[in-house]
Image (tube, rainbow over all chains, first blue to last red; front, side, top):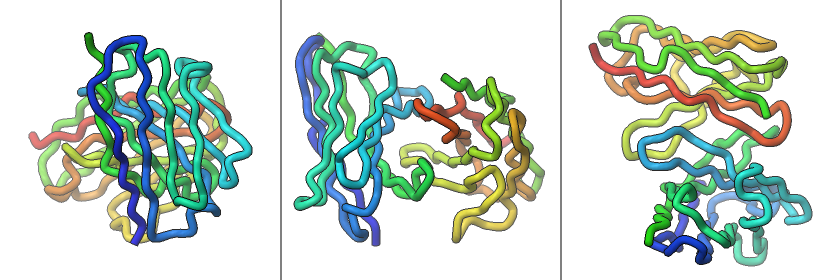
Length: 118
Length: 107
């Protein structure tokens, strides 16, 4: 069965960096685009970034462009999100999500909480 | 950026009643819309895609309709497990965006 397991969340000070990871199993990882979606505490969902199946293309929401980098290691079946220059507005649960096709998300991880606070 | 506006914000209904949720796009998105359910403490779950196609395993009481800018999710005869938050999401272009959500609560 498909499993997505995020890790790497935690408490970080404003302006610092953090990398979160998502370990995938149960499907052919290198055949699917992968996404990060976040949810601030008590708020709705916000799409953050996507990386193509082979890592050659990425797109980002404007609020993270230039600060966040999505990448993947298909040899390790792992998705990453490198987050730099973090601000309090980046505090959220970060979900990795597998793309079903045509940019819909059919499987989600359980999420990892990133808290940006001094 | 395409803005998706969901209404109402909260829907208070009893088990067995019908729920009708709305999602309006700020510009035409054809049928490029999905609906997700999120129960407390859980990740979202894909219910429908391309406005009206039910995902395998989703009960038939969930149905979707609409195209262009106006979309509807209907839940016939609410079951206890259906009380949750529902989000719409478009795929018309980048960035992908979600609506603000509709909470379906027990009356």
